[in-house]
Length: 215
Image: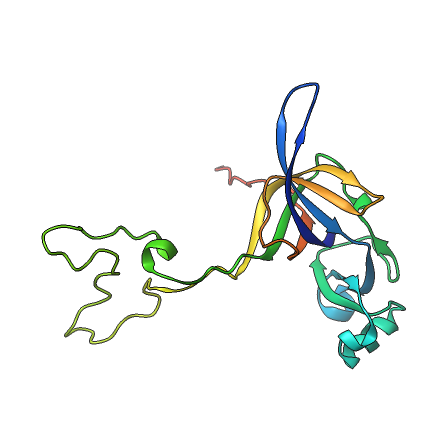
């Protein structure tokens, strides 16, 4: 499993002078990410690799985190992210954007933009009520349950509430360009999160369906 941690810098577009095609891309400053821990089935019950991102001074993180990083010979870093799956990485190695190539299929995970408290129309795409004939139900949610039975509102009813601010994974993305000198990944299309948000980039493997053949 190839993976790296980065910071979303924003979006721009690349113009190809030969074909005249304009490609929207997201610029991500990714790595270098030192390997802090390599987990195996024998010791941890599953395979994974833990990467660190964004060097900081020691006082910015907790003492247990400092001890965990020093055990791997790594200086203080603000973020620790685990990538599950088999990996050829070893302790102390550093992952850079050179692990990816233009055209690679990837998926990007991040914390989506929080939009605060929102009503049912914006949050769940409800239809509004009629505006005429004295209607008082223009943007209200409507009925949320019966009265006598069951005399309560079921869990999971779609209502107004906080919108966004949840972990989102965008699949089906492609690496457009790699800039090793500036540690930049240019990803075709949009990725989750605000500007300067932390994102996780993973390789996306093709999923094949296994059809059961009748004898």
